[in-house]
Image 1: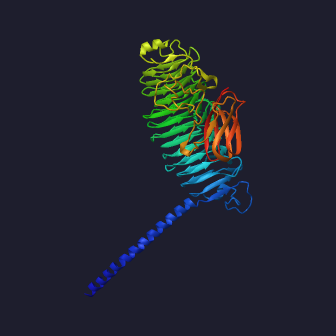
Image 2 (image 1 turned 30 degrees about the vertical axis):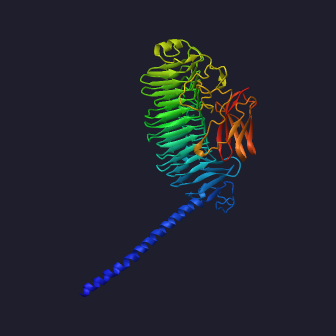
Image 3 (image 1 turned 30 degrees about the horizontal axis):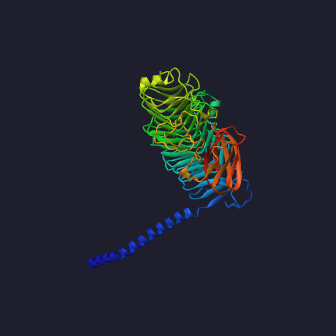
Length: 575
């Protein structure tokens, strides 16, 4: 009985203590949760800014603006923080800078002047290495090597998503910018990549990527050592993923004309899709360089509003391609379609492609509507198809032996195939074809000769149609007027109010209405070959003037940088 009473008393004490134990347990849990929440929110709301000035020699350095660190190696990078190197300074490293397992980190430049430089000496792998990190922004930096380094910037690891490289210069490495991750949401914007031995941008396994407003040139410089493509196989942009990749490549100048081999843009993987739009793509006909290569995919790639020129092939495709309002100029072949794939080409200009404008093999499907085929000689052919074709409402500047398949006249082609019943032969009357300005003059036979194909904006940004039927070609005639803005980038919050006028300009004097006053605005003018021809800086104004009166007539791109927003505008100078 004593034992039973002792046991009963013991059980009673356990029952009494249980609620107190549960209360303590809940208290500890809530305390830990609240502390974790506090530190997370504090990290987001109270991010530290760390300053680096490689020229600072004081012994006391704490990362403040008044007492900056003089080396990136004197601190550990933490999530949520901002790390800024002083403008106009150079930090030299032999080990690179690493951001590993972090989130919401910014690396950049502070102060006025040239971009801060991070220079790698000797040999190494990656000058800036972002691994297993998300939400990292690298901006306003110049990154290059004086030795032998694998890449300027790499973003890698399965969790490396939603990172951004913005307004950087990357040069003198094997690869410029590399992404090796299955994550999506990474962006490369407003950056210049040049003097690269292999690919300018290489992305592997990504699920999505955006590349916009970049200038890429002088890549695949291994070609200078050995022209064999097995050795020198660099591309301007190479995207390689079987991870249902989606890409948006827009508003870039990709110039692969100085070296040989490969492509300005290549995409491969069996289930990718994407958009290639508003780019200037410059290849090389005699150095085995093509504009765009699309490897076999089950999905559709949209190619629109691009200038694609001087290549072995403008597009070489194993894909379903929807191509509209592009110019294919001075290539050997404009678009080459391989077996079991298709081309839907609407409102393009095929200008002086010396072999074929459109070529397809057997087992292909080609649809052509509202295109202009301008052949420079009797050796130039407009169309050569080995599969099925549906073609109508096109304009051919001339007709000659075999210019469409085996037909020597449009009438013969109509009779043989039933195609092009509403097409015609005549002068498209371009405004300045030699300068690749494919606006239509008022006497063009292409005006109102197109069919309605569910497109509402032409290459120059003008509305389609102006009246009646659409025009054939890439420009909708509107009494010499054209769209003011051709390169919106909604994903980074572009200013819609930015306007270029008058456009076209008869005297070459343009004004850019910025939408509001900015302290400093830089404007760069590029011709359609991608060459920088003029730079203008204006201060404390809501409107900047660009005098292009001494430049030849033609089309130009004006890149406007207010320090807050960036936009590319297309200007037409026409006397």
